[in-house]
Image (cartoon, rainbow over all chains, first blue to last red; front, side, top):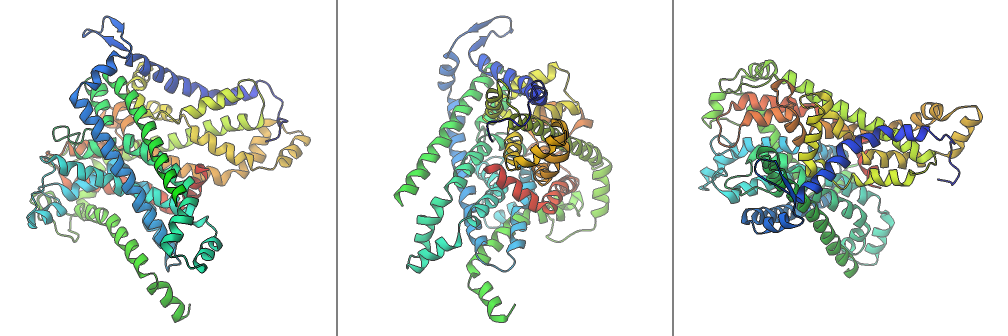
Amino acid sequence: MTDRPVFANRLLPYLLVAPQLLLIAMFFLWPSAQAIYQALLRTDPFGLRTQFVGLENFRSLVSDPHFMDAARLTILFSLIVVVASLAIGLLLAVMANKPLMGARVYKTLLLWPYALAPAMAAVLWLFLFQPQIGIIARALAGLGVRWNFVLDGKQALMLVIGASVWQRVGYNFIFFLAGLQAIPRSLVEAAMVDGASSRRVFWSIVFPLLSPTTFFLIIMNTVFAFVDTFGVIDALTKGGPARATQTLIYRIYTDGVVYYNVTRAAVQSVILLALVVLFTALQFKYIERRVHYE
Amino acid sequence: MNKKLRKSLVSRHWVAHLILIVWIGVLVFPVYVAIIGSTHDAATIGRGLMPLVPGGHFLSNYVAAWKGGVGGRVVATPARVMMFNSLVMALGIAVGKIVVSLLSAYAIVYFRFPLRNFIFWLILITLMLPLEVRITPTYAVASSLGLVNTFAGLILPLTVSATGTLFFRQAFRTIPRELLDAAKIDGAGPLRCLLSVVLPLVRPNIAALFVILFIYGWNQYLWPLLMTTHKQMETVVIGIVKMLGGPEALVDWNVVMANAVLAMMVPVTVVILMQRWLVRGLVDTDK
C-alpha cells in the first residue's frame, strides 16, 4: 500500500477496530494474563491465600511422573499424527495431480472429511471398533485378535491416532494439491527430458518447491495434534484406560475444568504452548536440512 | 474422447487410481456403516448382529432422533433442538468473525493512525494462543459475565479472528487504488466506499471465508462443552458425545447413529456445494 492513506479520518479507524479490540481484550488478553499469572502462584486448599512462587510450580510438575507420562505421550502421539497425516495427504495429492480421468470427482471425494468435527470422526470410529457391537471389532475377534481398547492402552492409543489421522488427511490433501498445481509443468518436464527418474524429480525439484506449503501444514497439523484432538479423546476414551490416552490437553481439561485446579491447569497450559513452539521449530529444521541436502 | 486417450488416462496411471480409490473407500466406509446403523433397531446392533445392508427402521430411528431420545436407554435432547443450536452458533461465529475482521482490516489498510502497527501486531499474536490453551481463565471471564448457557457465550469468545483480518487485508490490497480515488472524487466518504466499492469486490472472498468459518463454528467442541450445562443448549456434536457416555456405557446405537448422520449432513453438504470457494479460501489464507 502506498504511503498516502486513502482516508484522512482520525476517529473512524479506531471505531472500526474497536469491536475486534474489545473482544481481544476481554477474551484473549485478560485470560492469557491470568493464565500466566496463575501459573506462578500457589493457592492454599481453601483458596484464601495466594503466594507468588515463581517457577516452583513448574519444578514440582516435572517431578510428577503422571505429568511426565502425559508429556511424553503427547509428543509421541503428535509426532505420529502429524507425520502420518502429512505423508498420506502428500501421497494422495501427488496421485491426484496426475492427468486422471475423474480427477474432479476424486477431489470432492477426498476433501469432504474436512467438514467433520474430530469428535464426529471419533464417534464413527467408535461405532466400528466398539468391542461388543462394532463391525471391525467383531471381524478382529473372528481373526483371533483380542480386541478391547477399553482395557488395552496400546489399542486405545492406536484408535485415537487412527481417527485423528483419518479426519485430518483431507485438509492436507487440499493444500498439497494446490501447491503441486502451482508448480509449472515445464520445470518437471524439463527434468524428465534430462533423464532424471521421477523419484529424483520429486525430491530434488517438486518437494523443495512445495516447502512453503509443507511448513504451513506442519504448523497447522501440530496445533491440531496438540489441541484439537481433545474431541477425539473425549469421545473415544476419555483419557483412559489408566491414562493411556491422556495427552496434555486432556490433562489440562481434567485439572482445570473437572477438578478446578486452576494452578495446575495454567502451568500445564504454559508448558503445552512451549512444546508446540518447540515441536514446530524442530520439524522446520528437519525439513530444511532435507531440502538443502537434496 | 477417443479410445486410445481414455485407455492411457486410465491404465497408465492405474497405481494412482488404485491408491485414490482405496483411500476413498477408507473414508467412506465408516460413514456407510453409520448410515446402516441408523436403519436397524437397537436390539440387532446391541447383540452384535448388524449386517452390512440397511435394515427397516430408518423412519422410526430418525423420527426418534429428531423428536427426542425415545430409545430405551437414551434420554437425549431432540435432534431438532441440537441442530438449531449448532446452526445458530455456526452462523453467529461465521458472521461475527467476518464482520469484525472486515472492519479491522479496512481500518488497517486504508487509514493511517497512531498505534496502527501495534494494533495489527496485537491481532496477530492471538494466532499463537488457541482458546484451548487458556481455557480455564477464559471460561472464568465468560462465566462472570453471565454468558454461560447463552448463545452470546457460545459465539462471542470465538469471534476474535486474526485469520479473518489477515485474509481481508490481503484481499483489500489487491483492489486497485484508482477505484477508491475515483469514488472519493465523486464525494464518497470511507463508509460509502466500503459499501459500494470494496464490499462488492470482495464478495467471493467473503463466501470462501464463510464456508471455512461455518464449518469451524459447527464443529466446535471444547468451548460449547464448557458453556452449556442445560440440555436445551447443547450443540449437536456435544450432544452426540454425551449420548455415548463413555466407552463402556450401554447405548442405543441406532438413535445415536441417526443423530450422527443428521449432524454430519449439514457441514458435509455445505462443503460439497461450496467446494470451489472453500478450496480457494483455504489456499488464499495460506499466503
